[in-house]
Amino acid sequence: MLNEYDISALLVTIKLASVTTAILILIGTPIAWWLSQTRFKFKAVIEAIIALPLILPPTVLGFYLLMTLGTNGPLGNLLESLGGSSIAFTFTGLVVGSVIYSLPFVVQPLQNAFSSVGKQAMEVAATLGASKLDRFFTVAVPLARSGFITATVLGFAHTVGEFGVVLMIGGNIPGETGVLSIAIYDHVESMEYAQAHLLAGGLLVLSFIMLLIVYVFNRHFSIMRSDS
Amino acid sequence: MIECKIKIKLDSFILDANFSIPDRGVTVIFGPSGSGKTTLLRALAGLEENQNGYLKMGDSIWQDEENFVLTHKRRIGYVFQDAALFDHLNVQDNLDYGIKRSPNIEKAFIESIINLLDIKILLNRTTSQLSGGERQRIAIARALLIKPKILLMDEPLSALDMKRKQEILPYLDALHNDLDIPVIYVTHSPEEASRLADHLLLLDNGKVIGSGPINTMLTRFDLPMSHGKEATSLIDAIVVGREKEFDLMQLDFPGGQFTVPDNSLEVNSSVRLRVSARDVSLTKEKQIGTSILNIFPAIVDELSVEGGAQIMVRLKIKEVTLLALITRKSAEMLNLQNGVKVFAQIKSVAILS
Picture (cartoon, rainbow over the protein chains, first blue to last red):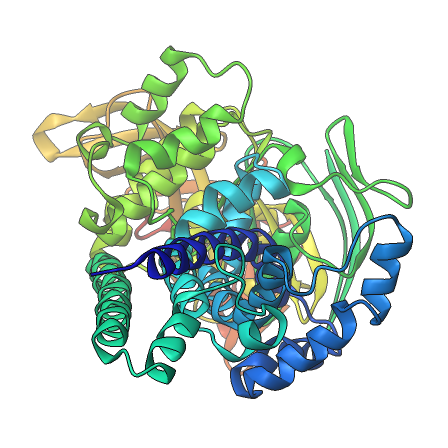
């Protein structure tokens, strides 16, 4: 069964994925809304930057994060001069890396959902006396709910599955930055295939269930919509 | 009064609307597709960006060089072409959305609007359980329930088929008769305009080409509606009595009394009559022994030669204006000129409400 090392890896992973997803929804929502509404000339540039983690090898991303956040990096220096310490090889560093790595998985579904809400529903709400913020929360968000479900599940699942970024800036400190995907790698390295199977199989099943939830929910909503 | 001087530049179109209209009754914005009707209505609601100008609504200034009152602070009822109900809310919650955001909406008022539009049995439905006509009635109720200062309607019937239109029109009449808020109604349908309008604002290619009381606009020779075989005039009248044995009813109007087929409207209800210019003939002396029931003394106000054989005559029956389309030959035989006294024989009328 799971040993102490595996359990701590599981807990760190769940904590990391939850914190990352929460932060991503918080910062991804305004970004996605802005992208869905703006006629900004260089919108495509912003979209490309956000989509970058989709195609970039995670080790590249991890390497640059390490360079920036590490003791000798510009942000690391800044943090140290402010009396803090470098966040490389800490849980916080892992969260920062994960947020950047999973950003497109949250922003894109939200942006699509906000775009399909359309202008008219918001205009109706305005004529009925709702201010900008009011109609965002009472019209745009509820109408984009399927986007929120997709974004949450994809953001969470993708963070659980990351490896390269974690390897570069996490450093696999048990209880702090040691996560499941690295634990699996360690088991394989030490020829502990039974343990590796347990964790890998668990992740496989978990990922499948989460995706299933997304598809069932979205189907449910699209059926409700097509009724009208 | 509603005073408006608005200029909007869209990609390949400029709306330059400069007009003032009464802030009571129904004003119909009428014009062909692409003339800028919807854009103008949206500008009145504060929904159009890239605009500048001046907009005064009764006592309040909604827009000038320094100020721009945002849509949600204007308190307008806006009915979109396709109802635009919120699909994430049921019917009741759709209605409550506006009520919650408006001060002092009394229960009795809510009841009265629900009765006016006859939607009580629909309140617990989801929006997907409504027909097109029902959706539009909910949308109208939702707009009215915030006690708007003005009701703006953008072709509310255009998305409906003939039968649904007939289903909604009586409610629009009721709105017209029972409510004391000004309505601005956009349409390209002459039938809707002549049935609903008190005032007409004519738009063509982004410019206002005329504005005035509906019948004046229909009979002005410098405007297109007063020409051709489709030309009509409107007469507002009141039911005063009936001749049961002949299935007829009598209607009083400022120029006299009409006798028309009974359509079971109650005494004292107001009706609007549409008289086609082709159905009006003129005589010098009052005919006796004719089958025509409705004959009124009139004075020739102005003549306009149409193409070919015909001539359009504008008549005054006291202060009521009427068009008659006759041949040029008849006009010459009767020696028609401005100010000549004639008798107008009206062969048939259509009752619009």
